[in-house]
Length: 75
Image 1 (cartoon, rainbow, N blue to C red):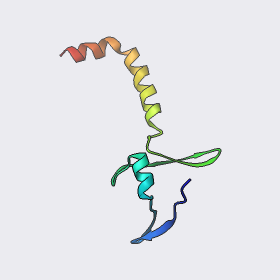
Image 2 (image 1 turned 135 degrees about the vertical axis):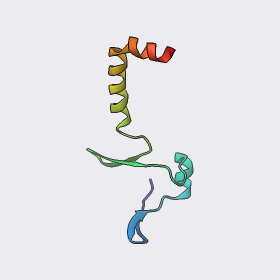
Image 3 (image 1 turned 180 degrees about the vertical axis):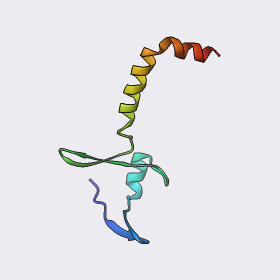
Image 4 (image 1 turned 90 degrees about the horizontal axis):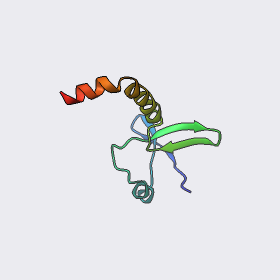
């Protein structure tokens, strides 16, 4: 378990992530983290929670318009 401290960064507040944790999560400067609320509290993840919704919508559309998409791909 890691405790992250909130600290002042310029005119904002931020958290610093220990180097060991950054290595474990394969995170680098500029990478995105997403915070979602769960029944257990807050979850911090590198996976975009909206990605699954977008992929479901894509699959629905791609099935409906399978022939049109295939035709476009051939061009």
